Length: 162
Length: 203
Image (cartoon, rainbow over all chains, first blue to last red; front, side, top):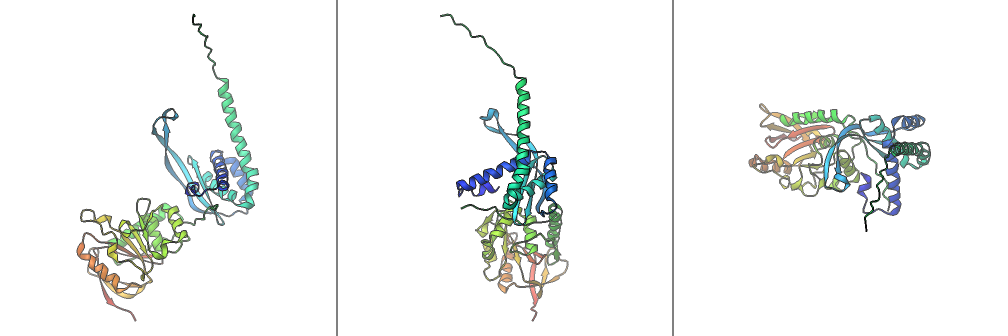
């Protein structure tokens, strides 16, 4: 939402800022709730936030292209949960796939905290990096499992008579 | 120049419930003109009064162009608030607007500069939200559909021109503009069919 609005006046500095934010939002959206909740337990005592958009569930249309190149078509609808929270004067947003209201809420709060200088670095270390590693390990495991079942097809080189 | 992320403030605390409540109250106000109804207050509202914002939150979305008067046109906080909670497009031409907000009487455009709709589609007219000083002061008599005999209400902060302009639009029915008067978190509706006469001016 915010990234698209100042796309014309973007400098490389804001660009990397936006990429960083996209990264942590992506990590928070894909991770399971428990580890996020665990880190929140450390902060809940002193971080006060105001929900300016309480978590709400809606639908989003997923569009796709056949073979990645064909013309796009509507693949189907997925449920999306969104929330927005203010931590002092910083607004954070949470958009996740599925219907987990709690996760959307916490994501919005952490997005706000990650934008604030006082808490950003610590949270990157405590929350985002471990979650990112866990996501990567899971992805690697999945692809290793898939790779183990890979079937190699050998084709005899056909000797063309010359 | 790096643009820091903007701060937004809260709308309704229970969006679905509050909007339904406000919608019902506005419906009630429109069906019995001259009756004062109380709306739910949204959170920190920039610039406008609570009733105007409650009405905008409830009635507007991305398909209803909104016109703002000179005082409110250039306020970033208000624009952010409306963009975040309603997604409403703000337009500069009164004729294109489906909703309009007037906060100051001095620089108010004439009522006939808004969209009056057409004979085929009178619903395409602009609904004008007018913020007034108080629902006390000058006394008015309201007659017409939705009023059995007559109904009195009080408003202060509207000039005589306003009532003249409104009267001049009445023969154009079904074309015309519907007016929502707001003050604090209260609202009085004057649909285009209501006939309003001034009874007395309070000292």
